[in-house]
Length: 214
Image (cartoon, rainbow, N blue to C red; front, side, top):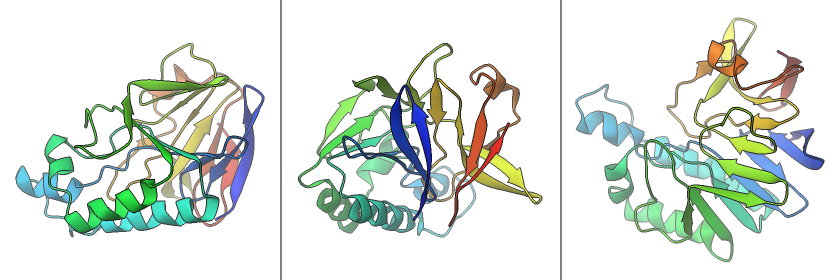
């Protein structure tokens, strides 16, 4: 899937149509907010009954990017599971699927507000991680520079339809949720005005990423 080229702190990045971020120099693939096990959490807590296919759909999309990019390192920016129990309830087939993707790679799980950890899976668990001039964390911090984060599931409206998007300015990139069955926050929400400096842009995901100024 094609990507939109952008720069952060002098580093060349690509906002991919899938919602993943690719840093080709050190071969780092970044995804955020997989929310694996969301349908199970809803059912467990008496919420809406969702078709239980989101984990498979999300893993298929993640595997497609891992296969296409062959990253040396994968960073999952938090909320990889929808809650603590979801990690423990991961089907054996899905756990094996993840482990095959992780094999031979430096895989970093960033803690989120939904999941403090990856439920015994391999890889390293971090609150945040600094690589060169970039810092990766779940929730954006005001005033940060070179920051890559997730959490908000940003979306932008085009032709009357809200679509997941990246948000970026000179200091940061906020990733869309990579997982299936994830809602989102309109990019016009006031929370983003406290994080993004002008000029800022949204990059809509899809077959062809579409940038437009905020």
